[in-house]
Amino acid sequence: MWVHRSGELYKDRPIVVYEYQKGRDHKIPLEFYKDYKGILVTDGLQQYHLVDKLLPDVINANCWAHVRRDLTEAVKAADKKDSNSVRQSVAYQTLQKIGEFYNLDTELKKLSSSERLQKRQEVIKPLVEEFFVWVKQQVLECAVPPKSKTAQGLNYIINQESYLKVFLTDGDIPIDNSASERSIRTFCVGKKNWMFHNTANGANASALIYSISETAKLNNLRPYNYFKYILTELPKHCDEKGNIEPADLDYIMPWTEQLPEECRKPHRS
Image 1 (tube, rainbow, N blue to C red):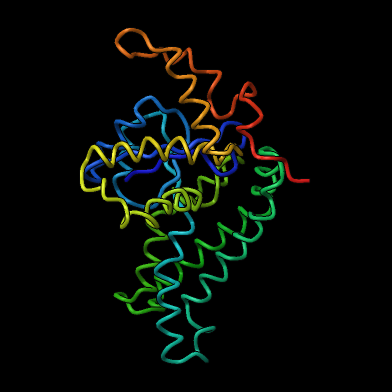
Image 2: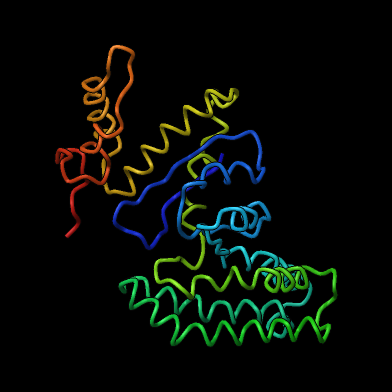
């Protein structure tokens, strides 16, 4: 199940789209994003870098949360053996350095895009540049065993450097794609109970339904009321063959102001 969603920092018309596919080949995102112009925040899989190379209007940015995974595993493993030496380990120091500018970026979420970009350039960019110099130094000095989790994590950082720095160029780019991870959790929680996932048609149907319900949630709507409303409105626009002109449906999109009040969640004071 592929998940495509608008950036966490983009509040105007948030959307999440689920898409069932039988594989993870680069041709799948290549087809989906063929008409897209903008930033694509992902993990470091080569499939996404190919999309970046083959589609001139797409820029691939990497997720900093994925950077921490091998390093976190290294710290956990070291902690089981000798908790006293963990703080001196390269993996722990690397996570601390990442955490420093991660925390700074979190504090910028309430700013406008332009203000966030300015602060990133002034405060976070120097830390990131210093961080990459430090990481390369650890690898050159053979500070860690070459086949260890720590070494894998450091080499991943070095190999993805250009992609990891993209968030510094645009205030709307999130530092990670954790929002997408949260969006896919719905399927992970319930999939064992969903018998219709035994078929591709069932998976496609669930992808469609959850695209609507999760997008409704992102736009502060009540999913049940929203479904009730659109299922009442859709038949009004069907021709004799059951086809609908997409332009006729603008007024029922989850971000439109024309939706009835019963579809909206109450504002919290």
